Length: 396
Ligand SMILES: Cc1ncc(COP(=O)(O)O)c(C=O)c1O
Image (tube, rainbow, N blue to C red; front, side, top):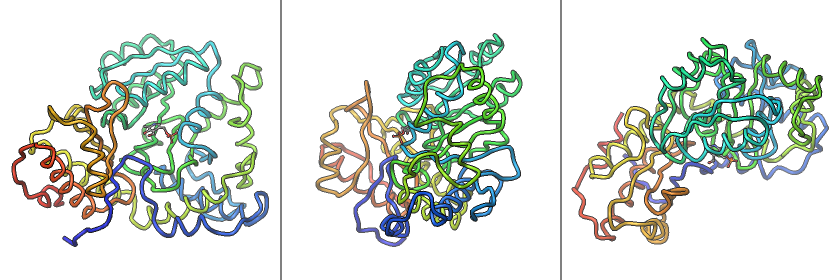
């Protein structure tokens, strides 16, 4: 394995951007409404359809680059993933609607809170890192009172990936629309938007696709679009302006956005998506899986406890509990002395846990070196750890 000597940046997003993406963002300005920007949008739309694992579209303007042979369109949002999720929710539900939101971490809880601003929510709160009780979800769906079920597919705060195929199957059986926060899953884990019958999903650029922060994308099917239009026509929609889905849909046909787009971010993201296409989705999913399984098995063998249930651990982020006597001062030292960054925990787990990202374009060499540095830093902090062959945990 080639030696890695650079900084290790192992956080679960924003992730490092490649040179082509950075270069593209330094392109000179172009107008927001001219044909050059339509070229940029068409390329971006086509790359996004690939990342969403949807049918292809031509990366050419005036060819409906946002659509394909399936029932889905992609919509670019100027704003981070949260803006994308708010756009999905605010436009889709009436204040009297009731949605079901099971959660097991911070970002799922945020989905529930966001929904509560726009409609009624049945929030089923599981402990962080514990899998949903599918029997309980099935019982809820049997009540036939839900307008949709929303989940955070990959819970970045606790390192668990929900059993989306099983939940999708239940939703299809009960005819309940299924909506995904796919911000740290799409592009990094197998996501089958069409096969799962997902009505709407969002991805953030700065996560699995290694694009810039501040831009996101949504995919929606025709049922979603019909519902938004019907709600608007009946004057029952929640107040939206900047994030108005109807305005975005009107402009999409023409490779445009309703307001001034995030022009240079779009240019950069498009190049990051080219890198994804070159690698292929399947190869990226596999690399993320090798990286995450390596980290999970290594730290388990070192005697650390992982937060998430073993059978649903995420391939894009691993949440590892600190042993007794270790706290976030370890992370500060890791950054200062070892030029290696991982991220801490949120809310009640702050100072008790750290998280290692395995998304974007992170190489196996970087992860192996990063793990060696983490181990050395733990030893500096007085932990006695067995000597293990780190490389061997990352073999295919
Ligand atoms: C699963 C998940 N959902 C939502 C968000 C929020 O996304 P953003 O910070 O892009 O608005 C994050 C950010 O880490 C996330 O990991």
